[in-house]
Length: 76
Image (cartoon, rainbow, N blue to C red; front, side, top):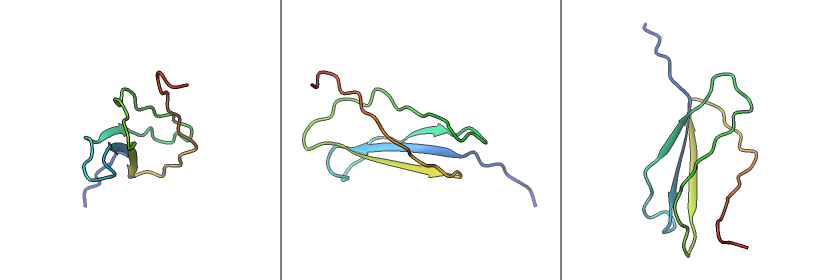
């Protein structure tokens, strides 16, 4: 039996219509044995009404999300 190494990844996609259609998935490779890796997704475009739904999923790794921040330009 051949051993095949599988990389752990975290993927993110978003929907601007309540989940009817989705953006292309953006995927990040997770660092092995790193328990404090910080991941950033940037330049995600403009958010308009009624809002945006994000979906985050992982493959081959255990992921805990401690928080999420949004930098909204032009907002007070």
